[in-house]
Length: 98
Image 1 (cartoon, rainbow, N blue to C red):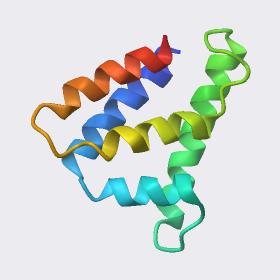
Image 2: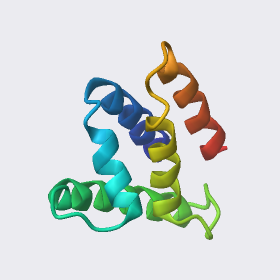
Image 3: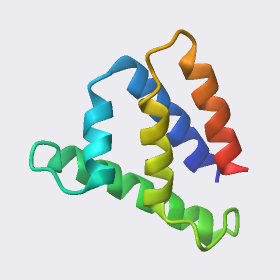
């Protein structure tokens, strides 16, 4: 589970550094997009692997779907305009993981 948490927290940092990721993430969550197909595949593979490991270890519920966590990250990224949003986003990651 710590690997999943670390990945999600780093992803918040990535969104902050690369504001262009928000549309790509939205496209991934909303459905397939040829523009972001490669990055979507990389994101999906990473989150699938980490969620599967966390489920297998019993750290998270078996009914958690990787796309649910990506949807949560997409929601966080849509509110990234205000100052200090990253701190709140990281708190939300910790809430999600808990």
